[in-house]
Length: 478
Ligand SMILES: C[S@@+](CC[C@H](N)C(=O)[O-])C[C@H]1O[C@@H](n2cnc3c(N)ncnc32)[C@H](O)[C@@H]1O
Picture (cartoon, rainbow, N blue to C red):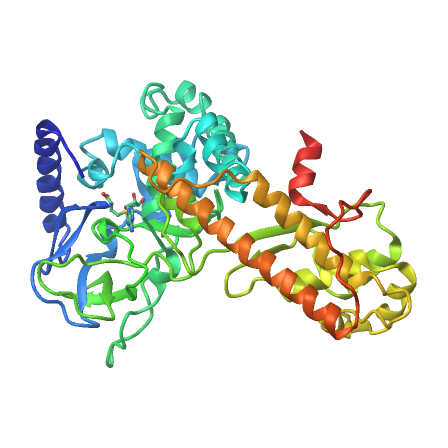
């Protein structure tokens, strides 16, 4: 990471202050040090760390959990304010309030920690509308980024400027800006650990009692809080960068008589090597970019979400009955991936939507076996079902071609890191579409040859198509 001399000195001073803080909090960081890496700050092994050995750990008292946030002066002020009295306070918002306060106030328990978090993030919520349009057009992430931004705006607007007017000493207007809230949101989303990890032991603990310490808010605070933050900040552990090749375990460990959150790696880390984390072995590039602001090239977990609208009230009753019988939900998202190019549930759904009513009558008789039956191709020999299979495949092909045409071609050598990460994301989406199209054509050929049908030379645009995609739904509403 290129830093100017002034920035380097300033950052070094902040790292030193953070190290002192870690010592004061009795963190176990004897085997690692905070250092600069190609992904910002990270942790480097000071000595060989064995496979399964706890690399570092942090006492639970040092974590910023919803429960800890609720106990701070700022948390209490928010919880007892007239502004939040009408309803429950969002637990996420409570975390943001305490994080913004802690960044400014040297008296905050987490001040030295919060100061070391980057002041700018690179996820799509930090991009301008135009950048989001250019980088994400035609993708699911474009909609997700907008949705997250407007949710954050709603949460912010529900608290400000009211809290600043009611309690200006706690919530000064110049401190609690939307930008500060955005920083807190992205800091939390990019660095948090799941509460589940705070409830399970990393290793069997001999004869000791195994009940994990309670990390939940007290009952009277929980009553006032919406349960919308299943995550906590763990200073130091959150300095670990992501490596999809690494396997780690995170959980409770005992250290010097206290309970810590610790991390161990299933393979050894040599002295001088980076001690990595794995933010989730099944995280898609959409999830990584939205929460962490980066993507993994050729991400094997990547998925292309496809949504087919089925909630149209004008749908024939028989179709609605078949969808219900098959247990297909109106808002169901079907995830296409390189491992599962054509999910059987999606094909079953398309078969229902493409089947003539008399054919559907025959199929509905299968009752609870309907989904199973529809996961295999519909033979053209069944009365009124002659066209069904090819129509279902063509419908999906049409939708994928439309999605493909809407996604701008990726430039993996783009000048800025966010542009490159967006390009990696688009490349992943386009790769799945392209492979799914090949698989669709392969299946069509097979189906035609098995049923002695002639393949159509060219696809024709369906007029008055009865199958509407989610993208179409969005277009229709704008
Ligand atoms: C939990 S923090 C890790 C510490 C962070 N590097 C820092 O400087 O504070 C997660 C952030 O680190 C960066 N990061 C982690 N792993 C990365 C990777 N494999 N590629 C690119 N950036 C990464 C991203 O900015 C991400 O949002």
